[in-house]
Structures are given as C-alpha cells and as structure tokens.
Length: 260
Image (cartoon, rainbow, N blue to C red; front, side, top):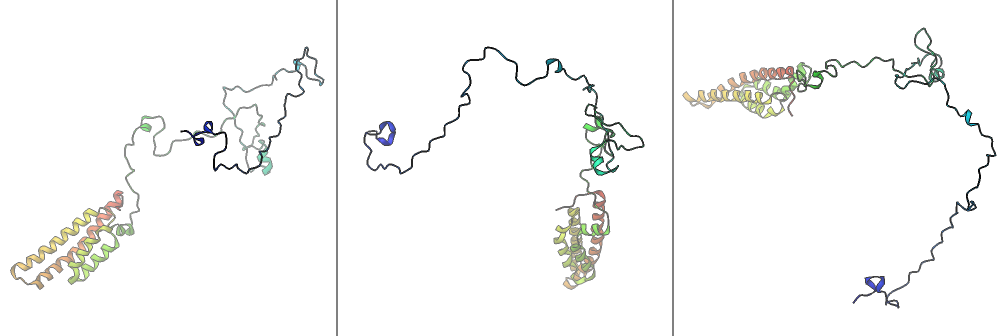
C-alpha cells in the first residue's frame, strides 16, 4: 500500500506521525520591476514632425573625395632614427630620417612597406623551395658529437680508475695479475667503445693465464708460474693503457656518443 513517503500525491489529509513543521521565517518578496513601456503612447503617431534640434542637410552628407590608398598596392614604411633629436621627438615624429635627405611626413592614407631586405637562407642549408629543401640531407651529421679532442677528454674516455689500476699493475709486479682482474671489473667506467676495451683486457688475462700454465708444465712450481704471470701482466698493463687511450682517441675524433 502506498504511503506519503512515495510522493506528494499519496499524502494523507492529516499530518503523519513524526512530521514537524520547519521553523523558518517567511520568504522575502522581490522588488517590483519597472515597466520600461510605462507612459508610452498606445497608438503610433499619425504624422512626423521636424526635429526640434537643427540637423545637417542630406546634401552635406557626401563622402569625402580625398585621395585614398589603392588596396592592391603594398604599404610603405618610413623608418626614423631613434637617437636623432630628443627621445620624445623620435618617438612621436617621423621627420628624423637616417641619411642627409629628409623624407616627407607620413600620413595615415599612405601605404606602409618594409625597407628591410628579404631574409637570406641559413648557411649550410639549401634554399627554400628547391628539391634539396624537401629531401633528406646528403650527409647526416645528427649522430656525431662534437667533443674537443684533448688529453683530458681522451683520458676521461678511458676513465682514471682503469688508468691508475693499470699503472699500478705495471709497477707492482707481484700484484700485477690481481690488478689486471680489477681493471676488467672497472670496464664499466669506459665511456667510448667499452666492448673493445673489455675484449682487450680479456685477451691480456688469457695471455697471462697461458704464461702461468706454461711455467707449470715442466716444473710444477707455483712460485715460478706466478713469476711468469707477473712478467706477462706487467707488459699487458702497459700495452692496455696504450690500447685503451688509442680507442678513446679514435672514438672522440669520430664523434661517437659516450656510453651510459
């Protein structure tokens, strides 16, 4: 069965239980709006009288016959020197013109045209509108990086960590094999052609291992094998320094991107 909760059309005659009238004040009344047509005549006028104030005759309302600008012609620009005369006169007058001659005063009915030369194409780029303008360049140079070829950039390309480790390996002979292995793990610091540098270190470690294994074949003396590895490691460290610096030199000269 529908109740008053289902809509106002089911509201009972008497207020339901629990209904409380809201305690609010009466609504304010809006101010009456003014009628703009109040006082206007109901009927339209039967005749038209002359206005009370004098008006110009229709013959005087003739368009001006002054010379006008042809819209098909370009505008003309009169340039003024900012530093000529005073600042106020330069900003509000066009009589100060560059050159010995004085140009006529510009009027609004004159056309304005630019005295600047047309823009020239940028150096190294083809002229606009030519087939080379819309086609790819003959030599793509976007992949090349311009890095100054100096001693600092070459050594930083190989990384100071590897250089110092290999120098110590070339000086301290009994630790040279260990330092050669440390240099291999520092290969991640190389900035240019890292894979070639790591291949060179792997080849050097293989030569050192072969030298130690060759010394162990006839004598089975570990001390002699380690001394053989020391000698091979010392020479390998100095050769790797020259090899790594050469790779860094050619990579920078070729414009390679540094590796992350």
